[in-house]
Amino acid sequence: MKKITINASTSYDILVGKGLLNKCGELIKPIVKSHKCAIVTDDIVNDLYGYNVVQRLESSGFNVVKFVVPNGETSKSHEQLIKIYNFLSENDITRSDFIIALGGGVVGDLTGFCAASYLRGIDYVQIPTTLLAQVDSSVGGKTAVNIDAGKNLVGAFKQPVLVIADTDVLSTLSDEIFADGMGEVIKYGMIRSKSLFNKLCQENAHDMLEDIITECISIKRDVVEVDEHDTGERMILNFGHTFGHAIEKYIGYGKISHGKAVAIGMYLITNSAEKQGLINSGTAEKLKKCLNVNSLPCSIDISADKLYSLSIEDKKRTSDTIRIILCTDVGKCIIKTLTLNEYRKFLEFI
Ligand SMILES: NC(=O)c1ccc[n+]([C@@H]2O[C@H](COP(=O)([O-])OP(=O)(O)OC[C@H]3O[C@@H](n4cnc5c(N)ncnc54)[C@H](O)[C@@H]3O)[C@@H](O)[C@H]2O)c1
Image 1 (cartoon, rainbow, N blue to C red):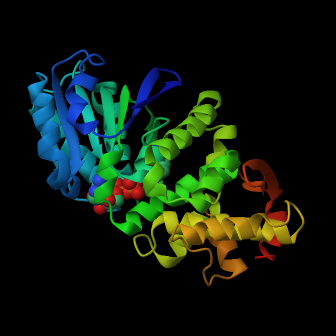
Image 2: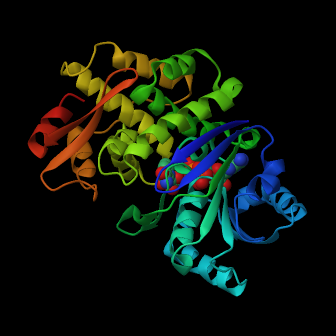
Image 3: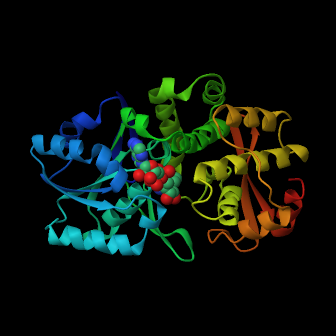
């Protein structure tokens, strides 16, 4: 088992390794103040792991209740949030008790926001069960639900008290959902680690899960520790996401996975930057090969105009400028601020 400590506004450990679900009771016990907890999970994860987690917690002396949401992005909603608040209240979950998010990024974001807001804040533990959730969404304390105007527009920063990433649970992911997480893993290689990137091009990720997950979390830790509230450097984690979000909107949420959209976004921005001589030549080709090896796409039929109009809709953008992340080489990135006019010109090279 590997342990990474995050020193943000609060400190907590992230444990990564095989067989950790079976030890969740004993791992959580020294961290929390109460013997009472509520698990939030989705129906698929519940069928696979819900029973085991409840058993392990109960045998460590915890009193456990469980709330199951339907799987999928639509559960990151106010409707589900209100249902969970009521469930917690009906089951007398008090401020000294805690919540467990057992699932992928959807369950993690929903439960995290619930923990940030229920009784003005209650402890929560993340047990991420997708690759994306283990390397990204369970780390760093961003929580949110979606509203009609867009994804993640209502949320809070709330760090968990513990993260338990059991690599065994990734064996039940479909190839598609696993590949989705690989999009984020490749992103970490591109922005910060040439050695991780090279490994991902040459070896089967399934054979080195503990190592690559630990390396990704360590990169995210380094970024989050200097910019917890996303006012500067944390932006580099958005490499490929400005175009990725635009592509998701263009194709339709749910019709293309987030990981595939980000993979295409990373390639398009890199290829465009390379054509303009802004980054080292050959970078786009290396990225393309790595994406292909990991069953991820790198192109889509979308016009520069469409990409422009959809990407400037981003509500987190400042008024007259847009900040983009460019990888000047594998493992190195910069943040570049462009006026909207310059951004439109940048897109003409796509
Ligand atoms: N908070 C953050 O910093 C952050 C970062 C990146 C993404 N996100 C959010 O994460 C969400 C996407 O997360 P995701 O990709 O994990 O999606 P998800 O939570 O919807 O999980 C994908 C699917 O996999 C299933 N699943 C989960 N674990 C499984 C397992 N072990 N075996 C089999 N099936 C399993 C789920 O039931 C679901 O159907 C988005 O809402 C995104 O906005 C948040």
